Image (cartoon, rainbow, N blue to C red; front, side):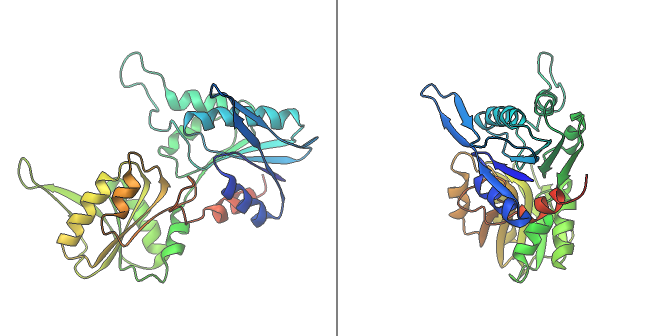
Amino acid sequence: MIIVGGSSSKDLAKELSNALGCAYVQAATTRFPDGECYTRIDNESMNDDVVIVQNTYPDSNLIEMFLLQDAVKKLGAKRMTLVIPYFGYARQDRVFRPGEPESAKVMTKHLGMMCDRVFTVDIHKESILDYFECPHRDLKAAHAIADHFKGKNIDLVLSPDVGAKDRAKAVGERMDVPYDHLEKVRLSGSDVRISPAKMDCVGKNVLIVDDMISTGGTIVAAKQALREAGARSVSVACTHGLFVNNALERLTGNALEAVLCCNTLENEVSHISVAGIISEALGEKW
């Protein structure tokens, strides 16, 4: 097996090659002055199973993924696997208004044209993967997050809403601590109370877990509400740390005990590695 690292996922790709004990190749990707992508794999051939590790966000990384697939195929790969740590365009899986594209379907169709299987990590809508005609699987980062926080005095795991309660359950059970979800209760036309649906958070060290953090607005509001409700400390961990519009600076400056994300998107707080769960999946027979 050969691991090819795209420009968005260099560190994760290297971790995977080390975990699997297989060859690693870093694609040489640059940009022309007009912004177009140029990439090259410096191998004479790739007569083996090849795994490309690359995000499809933002758009520039998506284009790079297409080009890497073509390069790998031309080098003679026996089978091609795509590992997409963060899958872009996963929000729109249907037409909501006339004239809109089915963005997720378009992307899966084009990504799947040359590959033999696909792995994603905590994709926003798992049903999107069914658009792939090749074998596909979404890997869950909950155990990686739980293992990172074991032994760090977390008393309660919460999801931001009931829709993400299964993530809190998976992390909480792995850590062997109680879990719950946050609930918004409207007190008046302008006042909303955010609190755990069932659990008491007084005096507890709380960990909020989510699939992604974009602007961080929900987390800031939740932290404030939990502290007002008596929580001793509030930490937050997500799979995908997008952190748009200075969200990371706002979160780290908001008296949170910890702000961490997985290395699906590499940044200064992506200290939770998903290499273990990906390498395990790649090592399975298929």
